[in-house]
Image 1 (cartoon, helix red, strand yellow):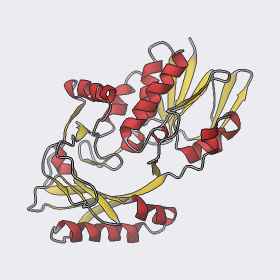
Image 2: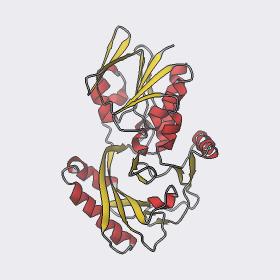
Image 3: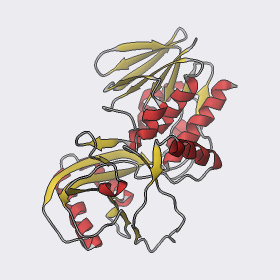
Length: 323
């Protein structure tokens, strides 16, 4: 039985791990505290939390629709109902736009796919070496691991640092600019407006979601996730850590201005910057596999900015490995 190592627990890493685990031994590592990648769920207590990455899933391909339909039947996913306010004048609203979310959090897909996988979190990969048909992985804590096969699902800039010398393909040399995102999570007193989400027509604030509307918990307070536009985040992300308070204040003030919700005291706020949130331009390939050194790469940025793109990339890689 071949041993596979998968780096990253987002939908790409979770999907390829699940597919490979049917015939192989798979270990997964992620530098985060838990699974999900871009669809991570920031938990405040056992139930209350924020979808601070991917806000919802809206399947496009037939295959992914079948996959999400199966997970809805299994009560892993559900439809996000309520009043969704569409303010963007540049894009025509699709009234049939489906919004699917995890029942407990949007990382539920990764958690479901990784149920039988040996996962290690808070393990940051720093270096890879290939020697004598084995991959040596060196982690930030000094730990070393050895595997027959290695699958990387990290963002393009991180992949470049780790594996450039092992990948002889044009996609690794491509100047791929991944968009950033700055997310602010807030807790405040309840409002009179029973809104689920806002899609704004603004240069700074792009989206706001009321977490209470997802019906995962009950609270006397309201919890909102605010997400910036890529245009604004790309300018601010490099100094977001040192300017967290200022950037959060800008997004929060925009939220009250654009929604018409009466300004109130913020009881809790948390700022999270996504340096490599998404890639809007699809590449010519959906994944990469080198059978000579048993190195694979799959990620959403091969296919596009949507969460679905990561699932498509992972399935494409599995087909290449299985040939």
